[in-house]
Image (cartoon, rainbow, N blue to C red; front, side, top):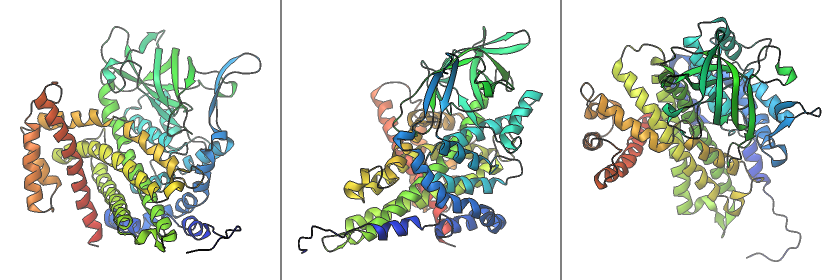
Length: 523
């Protein structure tokens, strides 16, 4: 029992010193082991190459991420200047602009940056949450990779080089404007019209959900006049020489969205009225190219981001629980809390191991490139979607559990970064294909290939090394569930299968992650 003391000397310094001194690479032995296991002969070179960015991410950038997210620094839209000219200027704090410039100066998407180096650097950056960088990086990567495959005109080549290699040290930011009010994830319902006028393509219509609205270039989905096929176009925000005059390329930014997460990131409604646009690939292949390249890269990155934020949340929850005393002992010593802390750490490490393993497979089967192993290429396609729905879901659970370790302090936005990162994680669940859409797509994909890649073979191949009874049980379960004709008919039997399929896919991918984790723990 304690006696009254009106000058209570209690402070959090011990916890804060431990938390703020943690180096994302040097002090994370598990991350180092993951690099050793999955990066192979490149491991030591990768660690050396990411050391500088790990230092910045662990300390200065971590602090900047919190400062940028403060309400008084919230991004806003200025429609008109003082002379009543329409400018649609997205105003962001100077800290955010400098932060973005520093990160983009890392040339993550340059052809000279090894893919494993890119992966690890992004994992380190994403431990700090959105911070007006995570989504822009994801979108920039997707557009850069799309143009790497399809840049066949001087305009597209110039955009690609600006995104990948920069111009005079300045790197372009990319975006993807696909969704419309009537369709959402139903991309074939796109209604923005593309019209060829005087040898130039121009866009007309409204995009309802445009994240990274401050981007230099966007990939925009539209239908050529009179066509039902979705085409995609590269659309500069400004034509050459016009950026400094705030004269946008044939569009208006109607308003910014008010989102629960990623609040530092401007997401807008944009109306096109004659914007000059440059076709990417065949006009009738837009939907396929968006899904196969742009969305695939984005979904891979969401897996990386989810693992990264879980890693930080689990770590800081343990640091606080080991510091905080309650009822005469540390919170971490209570068995319920000890179990929760272990579960958080296991999920974070399992997700990290899975992200590393999948990225290794991904590099052998890059979108837009021909694969020598059609089974592995199919595996990657499905595992990318499974990782997206599983890791983004698990991230919300882990971060919520981590906040609970702080008690009432867990919801205080200025006490820790976890509330901000939690809100960002909920957004990741929905972007780049919400859970239900991807569950339906995976089920349909497996049915389409069943003649040459039966469900049982898919399970056995991807759970190689797991306990035989687990493999057999899951193989039988997948075979039975994919035998159901579809996940569309709204009858009792289909509803029951949908519930089972949702549960199965989550358990299956977690088992796949567990196998990846075993590869590290056996080192």
